[in-house]
Length: 73
Image (cartoon, rainbow, N blue to C red; front, side, top):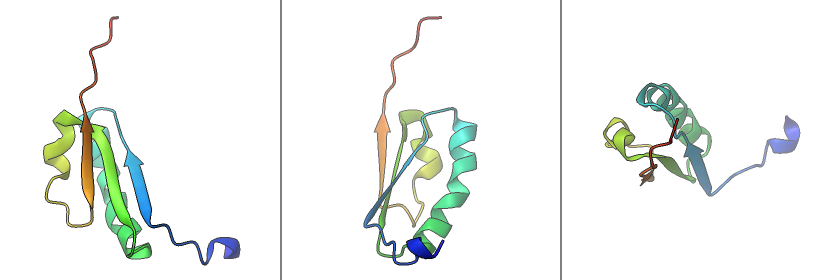
């Protein structure tokens, strides 16, 4: 682990394109990431319907949303 001691990213991208529950279960990682890397901007890529879950989170720099097309079973 010592080889990562000086690791300091400027940008972090979290990607969660699954159901709302999966997005919700991913949110606890945001604060510790920001605390560990305070200079990093944290981006969260998710589907449009999950935007409300993430909006207002003070540790996120930006929420990027996409509209996925429905799949054919």
